[in-house]
Image (cartoon, rainbow over all chains, first blue to last red; front, side, top):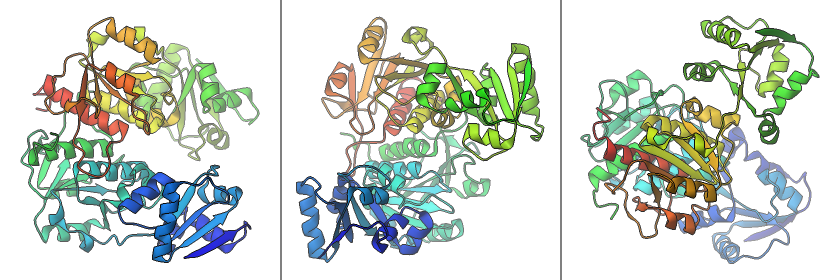
Length: 271
Length: 271
């Protein structure tokens, strides 16, 4: 383990860590930031130890941090202490008690997913809001999904907002990114029912003929799914819309569907 | 109707409109901003006409804007044209095609709600995220809820983010704000079952004994509900949590519950 103290704003490590807040630079680096002890503990419990841990000098001791330090020591990582001001520059927040971990991004290729590992998978197309994305990961964890597959131009699952909204599920759920024309051949190369909420040629979502593994597809926040994508689905279901609007928030629609599918597969799940 | 052109950044009307982006000043003024033609049209369809409409000079004509202008004319409102730069200052966005309406805030006292008007009501306690709040309004519209009751220190339903996330449901759903010790006497002064997702002394949410009017209570994003609030509920239900986490996003939990309650009351709703 390396221990390092940084006191200068212009230190290249500080610049590097700050750069991880920007999507393009994060992608280039292949690393992302996780802020806060709670999320770092979620990561640790799931078997992920940060490459680097950053905290302010003189931070209050905490048993969880001591545990993290031991794990980083064992894995050959690095612990950096710095000033509260520099820490704020890195996190973008003025909390001197904060702790930040640097993790390697995961391999998000479809081939990494084992579809037989779960009965439910969530799929999002052009989902632009990182909060929605993180919420879908969190919901996936709750329903026992295998993971989230991000189609076309989705928000970055490694952004601070997505990681935070996932409540740690970014470390427990499978995660893949693919274009539609990569996803469909992969899906059709094995078992899998593709289901979407739709108004076109749809059956009531309640008690529909869901089959495992069930891939629940939700579309872009403002456009919904392209018609060709909907028509590729094996099952289109409709949900009651009793008001003026004709759609739900994407993460909400996915969650209501996922709980219905869970009930179909596993009626005793709640007991 | 008044028509006015503003060309100076220091014009007091510009300062006033910009001030409506800040919660404290918005509250003092009792007015809020609604940005974008889609939301303004949602408002109009629901019977709400802006007091003031602001757009850039030379904006492309649009039949919906012409319709809005006629309604504002009829109601004695004001139409302001300004430069694209000043419009950006007001909206905080650089879209010269944008249109902004100024509305009076609604009366959000509990006494305005007619509990017999709907079988489902959503209740949020200390909900801090305006996006979650707006999403709950949108979900309420979808399940035919009567409205959303905001308990204790919630986000401002008249913030731009909440209004946007509501997709116009801020104009169709009832809206009330109250302290817990005002809400409970009001609730107990009439029919109403208070239901919360809980781990304490709870029954499975699926097929639970929901009664109309059903008030579905969700708690703060990070703290959940205080135990005393949970214990005040007439029914505590639990939802399957098959992963590592023990809770859902507040708006997600409310939506999954609301769709279950809707199914209980109205099994044919989706057909």
